[in-house]
Structure formats: structure tokens, C-alpha cells
Length: 319
Image (cartoon, rainbow, N blue to C red; front, side, top):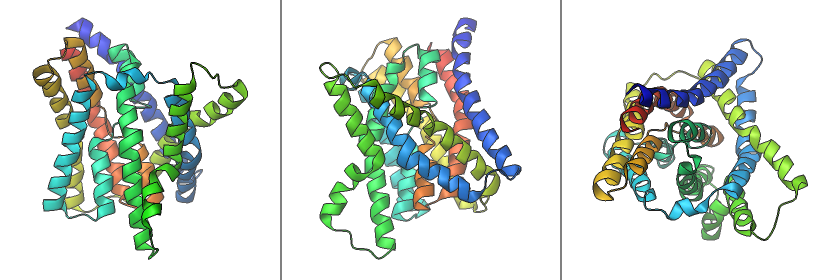
């Protein structure tokens, strides 16, 4: 038991790193160094410049064979369950707009697989490749679909026409999706084509600032943006947190252990991965489209704090 606990504790270093950067953003906002306008600028830089670069280098180096392994069925089934349950309940109870429901759905199923998932996989699972299928389904399917819906709703709100051709090409015109697609192409060409260092190094440097920008902007928002006052929003926020960090790992465990009958190592891995909190990217999306920014911020904060205990328990009990 103590050996398993010692194995799980290092995963907390990922949470510590996140907390330091968010806290730094809060302090800089408190001291007047960063403002709301500068928070918006950081979010835009993260979305349009740094994150596409990060997606490119991530996908270029990814082990794509993980995508076709049986354990991904447990992970993808858990993601689908969280998203579908939120959609059904939001239609019946929370009555959000299409754009608001899109942000809620992403918060319920889109994991922090990059800046938190990778260190958790490294320290708790001793294999970061468990994160590859999660990263792929999120940035190839969930992210383009969510951003396409948000783009369409933003155009409709402005009264602008949205031709079918434009709607169908929204995902591939999004900078994040472009970064993913270029990274996949580079990955497939890697056995025969070597990317020169003068191309990779600048892109790598840009990608390295994506996560710090997101976390600093998040800390500024905690200090300067409005505080939630709607009890319905709070109830929905905690419902989303429960779906993300409690239901999703339970479904992943049930599918892995009982339906797919995976070996204990794979069951342990898919369950711990499913415990990850919602991703900071969603805060950037909410900021970019000005949709439920405070709701996204507070739900992200709550899911991150809650997931610390859940990951520690899952990593210890199943190790």
C-alpha cells in the first residue's frame, strides 16, 4: 500500500506546476502588472500562435500505434458517456444556448492531456504514450467539432451568412487543427523525410510558451474577471466536474475491466487517464468566442482541485 502511494505522489508535481503558474498570474493581476486586456491578448496568442506550434511538435513525435490498440475503446467510451450525459441533462435542465452547451460539453469530456496528463502518465504510469490516443481524439475530433460549432454560432450572432462550404471547411481553417494535421503529415513522413533543425527549433520554442500563456491568463481571470453569482451556474459547474473526474474514470474502469477484460496494467492506465481534469484550452476557447468565460474558468478550477484526490486514489488503489 505504501509503495503504491509513493508511486502516485510524484504525479502531484504536475498539479504543483499548474498551481504555481496560475498563482503567478493572480499575483501579477493583483499587482497591476497584467490587465483584462492583456489576459485576452495572452489567450489569443495561445490560441492562434503557440498552441498550433505545440500541436505540431506533439503530433509529429506521437506513437500513432497507440490509437489502434484495444484499451482506447475504454477511454473513448468514457469520453462519449460524459459528453452524452451532459448534453441530455443540459437540454432538460440547464437550457443553455448552443454555444453555451458546446463549452459545457467540452468541459465534461475534454481532458487536460497535455500539460497535466503527460506528467501524470510519466510518474504514475511510467509511460507517456498512454496519452497519445486521448490527445488525438481531442485535437482531431472534439476540438475541431467544438470550434466549428462556436464559429458558426458567432457568425449567426453577427448576422453574417455562413455558406455550407465555409461551414464544412471551418475545422481545417482553425489554426489548432492545422497544427495537428501538419504534425500528422510530418509523423507519417518521418521514416523517409527528416525535418531540418532550422524548421523544428523555432516551432518548438513557440509551442513551449503555449501552456504558460494559458495558465497565466487563467490566473489573471481568477483575480480580475467577474465572480459567479448564479446558483444554477454553480450547480451545473459541479455537475460537469462530477461527470469529468468521477463518472468518466468509473466508466473507463467498467469498460476496461468487465467489458473488454483488459489486463490490470491497461485497466489501471485507462482509469487514471480518465481522472484528469478538464483542459485549460477550453478557457481559451471561451475567451476567444466570449461564451461562458466565468463558468469555464470556475469549472476548470473546481475540476483541477477535485481531480488531485481522485487521481491519487485511483493511482494508489489500482497500482
